[in-house]
Image (cartoon, rainbow over all chains, first blue to last red):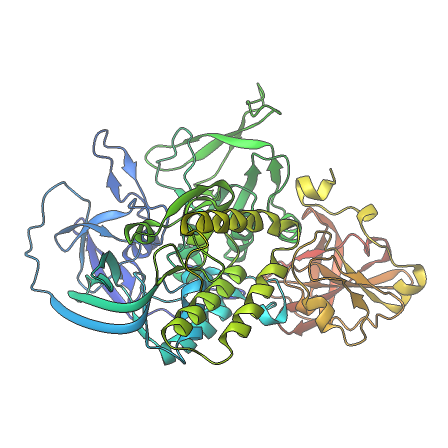
Length: 479
Length: 155
């Protein structure tokens, strides 16, 4: 189930190690996640549901959904999708028992910085790089590597030269990683667990792997925590093998592990279309892409690429059921009529051993909300988001947001938002020459980016977010 | 509603088909029909044959100016540019290819249409490695506007 050869990616695997799963000795490579290692060994069932003992597998692959929780070295509820596997590790299913091993005494590290950035994806790294010539910056990310979702993207990015158009996502990730690592303090495998207003901004972060607790005092905070994959309601949606599209991308393009032999993709937005193409690149078959809307939602050029490889796209179709004994063995799809009801007799059996849900994302706002930034439900933005102004500052002074948690959009927009937030935060600590002008340039780039038909939704979302922000703040705090 | 909006398949009536003369010369054709913010094709053209009023427009190729260099095929993030050239009974199609196995010059492959169906045999005439791997195949002239992908069988 491992990918040995790939047309775009090179998998640099670490040294061979062994770990134990339910007493069995299994091979893994250093640097990969426990979830990826289990998958590579053909293990998809990670746990059982508490009440009905239904088998459960992993879903999001980026530490957000809790579907992959297992007991690791005696500690329950470990997120196996973002925890690197180690030599001799003992991995078991959660059993409801409290930890047997004692929590070792953790080291506490106090830190004082100008700007603390939570999330090292497209937005967070862009903010860090932009701010770092003028301010001390720490970037905190709970994943084992920087780059967020960029590290899984094999396709060339759209846009203009300025936004690195024509460069593949993985290459953009590498450029950002290198620049940020050179200029900023980076804390990986570290989760921010809480924000406290002590008259100044204060956060607590934990690195469980190294037993370090960070106490971070910051003049400004930028939350760039991204988004999480949406679930869809259908029979059998909890079977191991029903994955978030991004989770499959992680497995396949970060760790070089195939999610299965043949997949069904639900959702023909850009995520679903790109994933179908990436699966074909990894040598995995795609049965079909289905889409409930009458039109394909993603870019036509992505759809055309997928069709040329022989993958059918069925619009006005939805999934009724996933079936299988303990894991996905197939799906039933059916056509929808104009009133979104199933057309009688249109059921089709799709043979597949995994199903990818690409049905939209929800902004990951919890930390920003806990920090006290005012929230609002904005349909166009993808759900609850933090209100913010054109500088990406929220209603709570000195707290910024950038990227998907501030409205679901493309990585290119996230990078520009990051730059605006980073520069504005630095400039408000200590004036930066030419900052205002540069910020205006970035805003103009964003405006142009959102001008076409695909920009209509984010444009509307941002208008509403700003309108509500100024309602709350009165004419309020100017920059 | 256009077929490509529903199924992702471009039809000939959606495209600006080059004249016989242009086809003999060899030109780039664009199958990018949707307004998305993207312009590397325009910037890659050495003779300013590709135009766009704003970055959200679809590209227009001036077949008189186009020299068939293939830079735009290499640059296009959407893999929506192709080179087409007709020479008597035969035609050359240059297309982006991001899969394994990579064919070699002289290999016999199958040409696929926009739905991924095999339509005819093809011979690989040229491989170019830039930002994207470009494969030039030779097919019977009648398939010049149909052949848009290849299937490589290697033992």
